[in-house]
Image: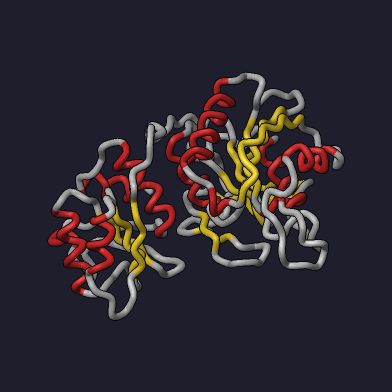
Length: 330
């Protein structure tokens, strides 16, 4: 970045950070009720040393984010990477699927300029709303000359998180995100920013091309007493990949593992992740992955494992060994 006032592209998608209708103490609200122009206007009133360039992509709750919005976000971010007048990108986003959007962009964008997702757990008109502080923190990060080269980041609750490690772990608390296996990249307030290490991905190219379309990849949650019919149903609707949100270290009843092994043998890659909030899923511990042809998700939870598997399948990577190598790389 140069020494001039940073110029930051702000891409709006809606979410709770733009939520309205709660009436201060009420619980109900409409995500995306406020326009991006209004949000940016509120932030400009704080007198931050940055020029914000708003571009609204959508005004929806992040549960409704899909390929069209991801495609638009990727195109806008890629354009910003090539525009010498833009120093960084901030994406306002709902928290429910922030890890999925962030990870997809992390896999398919170069690391030449900072890309930061920011959201909120309380709508803009609620008592104690956290959105403007998070937004101001995101501007602080985006404006920092050494913010680039760290992959796509998420700024929430005075923390800067790498999206490849971030997951939502609480339904309503303002510090709703945790990271695993690595901790936060930095702590941030509107007036301070302390990085915990140097940039570790400086100058990296995108790991994968952005797909022309995303294949159907399903998450199957394991439960006691389940049978093989859910696996058969997913194959019946044309699933091109399956992520198991398994018990413990990615486990499931034997009959389910056998059905998943048949799916893998038919050319549908199967990744074992865990429904447990934190921990590694390793190969060949209790489940014999080598014999069954399955892939261990390692540090990725089911949501991010699904994103990576979609990108891999879209790019023609379906062999279990190649898929495992991608998951081992994080």
